[in-house]
Image (tube, rainbow, N blue to C red; front, side, top):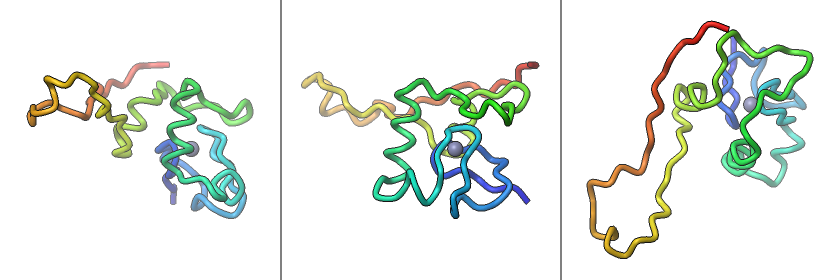
Length: 106
Ligand SMILES: [Zn+2]
């Protein structure tokens, strides 16, 4: 059985994200990095730093793509910080960007 990383959406954790498990994808050590910091905050930090594959021991799956992984896990990045005053009343402005899911060969 595989488990989902609540920070980056990596879906092949060998056990639940707790008890010092380190996600090979985002590098979060559960029970340590997420002590006092929410998974969402950690996710934003991971994305802001480039959303790179973390582990040098555990290779990324073939064709791994951070955005596809986040999309599959329902952890899409949303943009709702529109600053233009004239856009304030628009209700049909999409705030979620859907990235195309493609399976590229490694
Ligand atoms: Zn992760």
